[in-house]
Structures are given as C-alpha cells and as structure tokens.
Image (cartoon, rainbow over all chains, first blue to last red; front, side, top):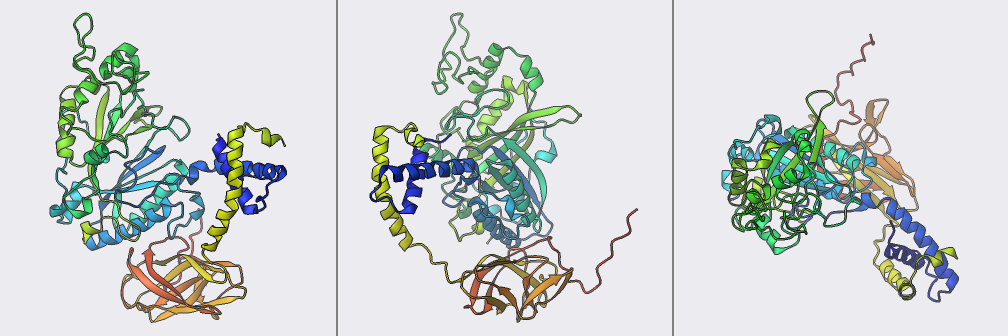
Length: 405
Length: 178
C-alpha cells in the first residue's frame, strides 16, 4: 500500500529531525530510510482515520466531494414554540461541533471522546425543509425555486421517510466514527428538535475503487455518469445558489428520494433486457452501441432492423436533459435494511439531486421519469424530502446565522 | 542494508539525497515559529453546562475543562470572575455529593487535570442571567502561581453524564430488585 513517495517522505522527516545528515554518509541515509519506512507504515495504518475534509469556506462540506463510505441523513422536527433565537443557539452549537469533529477533535462535553480517533473525511451539511420557513414565518427568506415536490403517480411514500424541518447530513469513511458523531449531533439537537427519521446509506470504502470511478448502485448499474465534474464552472452554475437571500447564496437545494429496488424481479431479467431498460451496457457503463462510459448518448442511432439502439423506454433517454438547464448533481448512497418480515432484505438508493433551482432543473426531469420510464417497474419511491442547504462559513462565523437573525 | 535495495531507482535516490540535505534547514526555520507552550498553564475543551438549574437568573451551573500545567511548579485554580456570576468557586463531587473544594484545585508540574461532570468543576453561582443551551459566556480563571486565564465565548451545552445532585431533596434510593 505504500508508495515510494510516502517511503521517501517518511525517511526525510526522520532524517531531518535527527539533524545529522548534512554530510550524510551511506549508513546515515540507510538508517534514516529504515526509520522512515516504519513511520510510513504506521501512518498508513491510520490513513483512513486521518483523512480530513475542510469544513469551512464558501460552501458547506459534503456536497462537492466524493461520497464517503458511510452516510446518515438525519431529519428533525422543531419542538413546539422554538423561535428563531433558539434556532440561532442550535446553529451555534452545531457549528462548534462541526468545526471540532471535522478536524478530528471530539465535540465539547462528549462523554466518550476516545471514540473520535480521527475525522475520517467527516462532513456535516445543514439544510432546512419548507415547513421550517412556515413555522418561523421566514417565507421571505426561501430561495427561488425551492418548494415541496408535487406528488408523482409512481410514488408510494411512507410518511416515516418524508419531510423534516431540519436536515443534518453526516458522512464519514468509518462507520464507528460516523455512529458516534451521529449520536453527538442528535444529542446536541435535543433541546431544540426531535429526530424525525434517520436514513443510513453507504458506497464503496476507500481503497476499493480507483479515484474518479463512477459508483454503482445495487442494481449493478453505474450511477452518476452525467454528473458535472467536481471543481468546474459547470458544477458551480448547476449547484450553487448565486443570488437571493444571503444565507443561501453559496448554498444549494437538495432533493432526497428513498428509492426501493425490487432486486428479486430485476435479477430475473437477462443481461440484454437489463441493458435495454437502462440504455447502457452494464459492464462498461457505455451507452448502448458505444464502448466507453463517457461516450456521447446517440438517441438517433438505429439498429440494422430499424429499431432504436437506445429504446424509447430506456432510463437514460427519459432522464436525459431536454436542455442544458435541466441538469443537476447526484451524490447517491445505497441502502440495505431488514425487510418487514424476518429473513427479508430491502435494498435501494438514497437518491440525491443538488441544484441551485429545483423547480427549473430537477422537476421537469422527474416529471418525465414518473410519466414513462421502464425502470419504474423495478424501483419505487418510498420516501421524499427537500431541503435548502445553507451557504458555507469561515471559522468564527455561524452556519445559517443570516436565516435566523 | 536490505532496505537500500528496496525498489529505489537511481534518479529517485539522487532526489532523496538532495532533499535530505535541504530538510534540516527547513526544520530549523520551522522551529523558530513554533508556538511556545512551555512555561504556561493551558486550558482546553472548556464548556459550561446548561440545565434546569441554569435557565433562570439566580441559578447556578458547572464549568468543565482540561487544565495542563506546563510550568515547573504546582499551580492552584482558586476560582474566577464572570460578569454573569458573582460567585465563582472550585467544587468537587465525592461519593455523589457536591461540595466546595477548599483551597482550590492543584495541578502539579507537567500534569493535566480534568474538570468533568461528576468530578472536579468550577461552580458559577447566583447567575445574573439565564444560561441556555448554545449560550456563550465569558469566564476568567484565577490561579495561585500563574496568571489569570480568560475563556471568552465559552459554549453552554447539555450533559447527562455524571449528573450531579443539585437537588436539595435527598436522592431516591434504588428499589430492591425483584
């Protein structure tokens, strides 16, 4: 697992500390090298825990970055009579927790600080549901395009996975660290709100797939090929809110849909049939008739018999943007939970869309998919929620301060 | 010498040698700007507890932290001052009973003392305003043998751990088990 670069860097640090190498002879170099090697091995053993994602800045963390291995979406409902002043104190607490935990320090008053062995790429993202704006009479501060979703005929929504006044989305590359941080955040929220639902999800762990590789959902499909690339102007324009209420400028809007998969019937389909449903080859993720995942989707291509290469009912055709404005960023997590009956597993996707204007960018696509998408036969939306995500802040500032003051 | 043969290309080896010569100079300059922690008393992780005893004027509460004595002599935390509490005392909990810690809290050279729920703490009494969850307060700690330490904007949090018996009524005795 060690790269040569790590080994050499390790040896340099050790040699430098010893300070005896100005006239380094072969033996000194060799000794330094040996020590550096064991230091590098030790660092490698805690590499996952020590990875850090910067929590501060123009945008909140947990959106424009690779999805971590584990994630909890936590929705809260305000306690009766909670005011904007109370909200502000809650935000003070959460901002303090986030700044400490993201750096790998335990939160203040943590009864089990030993559990925080590092940040493990922890990110915490705060958002607010439409109901909160009503409850606190903050309608004037709702970002443009942010609203409850209409109901779709494909929906089989279960209230226990819907709505929520406040979202705390917390992710990390280590499940034990995430579990502890989740408890801390819920505990620190308990004076202001009750936990409404918790939806855990996962992706591949660090060290399992090459950097930049599109992840797969539990139906085996690559999922997220059309995403805007991280760190690009395209991403900025699609995701981050550029004007409107100050608390939201640099924030975004999130749709979270809990999509149950019927894997038992999906498994029965042949490989070719599955590829037709999606419009992509399962192995490479390439559009049907193409060889590479990122090849152009040619909806006009015909087979020798005159039929469409990508069928009319294919998911990629229905999901594809009718114009460039109908795009957004997806950062999904898989889920697997026990089914209602003993011995049953339920698998699915915590599907997310991030857009600066959900009404313009996401709704048209969702309407098309609800209307006609063969994939709907094997997938059922069972939960749905939207949240306006606050802008990021610098150290010393308070998340969502302008919303509640 | 086995490790020298470890897959190290000639070019890489030369780079390493050059860097080996550079590094001591860098370390030296870094050391010059390293924070001077030695010789000071350091407080970390300070917070004040918000509870039903602190949510009104006239109430009281505890303050918790870790104090490290980096000096070469024993220092004693003897109390403090705060604009929202006329009385600031050092307290202890022994066998579940809280009492004033007469003489303050001693911290020996090189030692870290934890003030935590259910143990040693600083008591703020006669609060002039409510301390709620998420409230920030200022506190100045007074030491015997060291300078005052100001804790600005200390955060108030809830905590169930080590719940202290602030209630004047006696603690309920556990029922005999069935």
